[in-house]
Image (cartoon, rainbow, N blue to C red; front, side):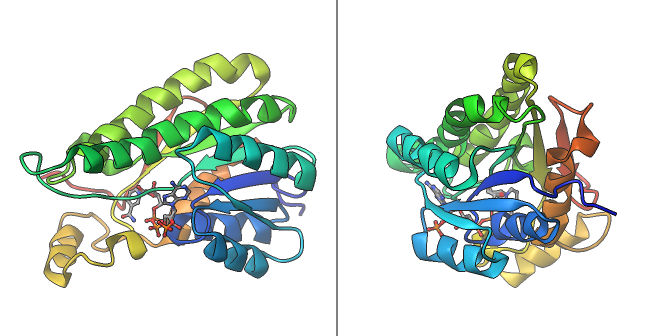
Length: 245
Ligand code: NAP
C-alpha cells in the first residue's frame, strides 16, 4: 500500500535532535522528502544524511525573519514547494520567576512563540500552493503550568492560540494547522533532569514511563497526512496519560 506521505515535502525545524529528528526519520521512511532545519547546522546535515539523498539540510534560526526568508527560498529551490511544516525547534532556560532574567524570558519566547509565528507566516504562501498543506506546531503539557518555567509555559500556551488562529486564517488556502502537546519525552532537552525527578514524573503518568521521540513523531506524521484532512485547530496531547494529581 502506498504511504500517505509518498512524494510529499516537509520542513521540520529542530530536526537535528530529539523529537524533530525522530519526526524527520518517520516522514522520510514513508516516502517524504524532508528539509531538516536547525540552528545546529552540523546536526541538521547529520540527520539529512541519515534520511538519504532526497533530504536536504537547511540552516535556520527560527527566531530570525531573515533566516526564515533564506530557508523558504532554499526549500523552494531544493524541493519545488512544500506540503507540511513542523514548528518543533525549542530551548529551555529554567529559573523561578523571582530570579529569571529578561534575557531568559525573551530567548524562550523568541524561539518557541515568535519562531512558530514566523514559520507559519513565512511558509504560509508556499503551503497554500500544496492544495493539502498542513502545519503542526509543538506545544507541551507544560502549557498548563510548570514550576521554574514561566517563560516556557507562557510560550507553549501561546502556541495554542497561535495554532487556532493560523487554522482560521489559512483554512481558505487549504492549509490545516494543529498542535501536538507532548508530555515528558526522553530527549537531550531533559538530559540534565535528575533520575529521581524522572522517576517522580513516571509515577504521575498512566503508562508509567516517559515518552520516546518516535511516539511523538507518529502523531505529528498523522496530522501532516491527508488522512487527517478534517482535523484542524486542534491540540493533541501525547503524554502517556498524564495525571495531574
Ligand atoms: P532537543 O532534543 O533539545 O532538540 C531541539 C532542537 O532545536 C535542537 O537541535 C536545537 O539546536 C534546535 N534549536 C534550538 N533553538 C533553535 C533555533 N533558534 N532555531 C532552530 N533550531 C533551534 O529538544 P526536544 O525535546 O526534541 O524538543 C523538541 C520540541 O518538543 C520543543 O519545542 C520542545 O519544547 C518540545 N517538547 C519537548 C518535551 C520533552 O520532554 N523533551 C516535552 C514537551 C514539548 P541546539 O541543540 O543547537 O540548541
